[in-house]
Length: 312
Image (cartoon, rainbow, N blue to C red):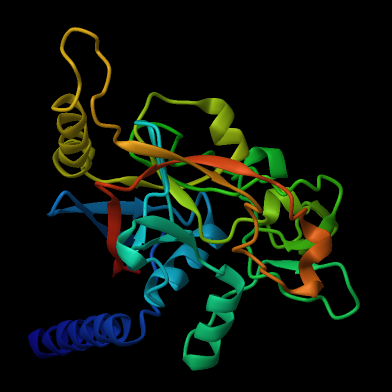
């Protein structure tokens, strides 16, 4: 009897070890809460921040983000827009040619297509409504305004430490695309695809932000919150403090005005150009004359040194 029990324990232990090994080798054993570590660099110092993601809230957004991270897409990008509560990143790199510092938009579509010809694969969830169902390499908008309501409520809210997928103004509010539903078609007569979704809500590419303010339910309804800083106080707050200290050191005590501006206002024309630059197949999906003004930290940039997946 004891021998049989010992054999069963040994077999179960071996199976568990084999499964664990398979997870490490193939990242095939996924969890509802994968994790990433984003390393920010500011003023010569690194700040490592661990984020917990939610496949329950946003399975397609999480998959998309992890695939970009694994491909090294985010490494070396920078915070291109900053206002103290929003740290926007994931679409621009620093350009320091000719002794001047500026930001350079990433041609998202060209980069992911190039990565795909190497060894990386990007899961599709949005397509054009054309005969070929052309994949757009954007991600399904997993938030209320796009008709996506998780059955058991949301795990993460748009509050301090939230990791949020962002999409820019497309300037075209009528164009429709096909998306893959999260419910497998249960709420759509068994059809897992919707062919009448607004592109503007399903157009996120690589931009995301970390939020540092109080909860905003309106943002929660219109943008996909797909993760949250695991230890905001000990990991992200030191970066916030370092930036605030840098600003305070350059603020006149009497007037309260900055003697040195932390951010530079940069007017950006063709805000969507980095997504599908110059590709005629996508010209109908956005207007190229949409413009934006970013508050860019340049003299003391906030650089995303790396985004590494630590748990699948």
